[in-house]
Length: 180
Image (cartoon, rainbow, N blue to C red; front, side):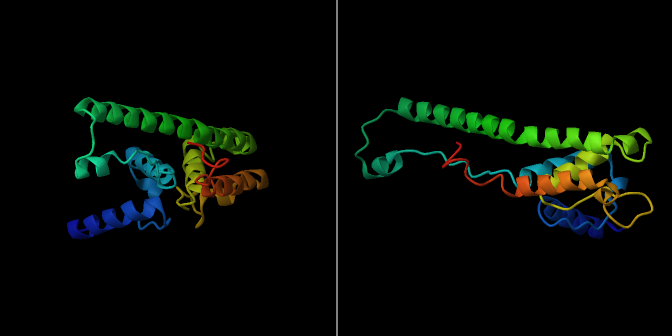
């Protein structure tokens, strides 16, 4: 493939990996590091990045010249903001990742016979699971079948994929009023 087409294809894949699920190359032929980066992009694509840091009207007061605080207040606010973001990310990851691992565990049970026969490997199942959780639709595929890997899953495995899609689609919804 010529260099200019590779660049365009790379940009296309970078955008589609996050949302669309289109693929212009066979993903199973890509280097495993690229596949792992695709999994991270699919997981992060639906991650609720809207981490708002609530602050007072300090900036408005500073611009009006009525703010009486010191510069130390600003460093304290920045430190507390970073602490808030870190705490929020830890809580969100711990809240979401257990669904992915639970889904992987259940799929390992439902597809255990095919894993033992080396028809599937756990890595391909994890890729399919994260793609479902991110509602992206990418798949490493199945040899000699023009469909996704999940087309070869048992009925129970397909139900797990459906449940992961629903859970991933709704994970940005408020938990109570605001989980953060």
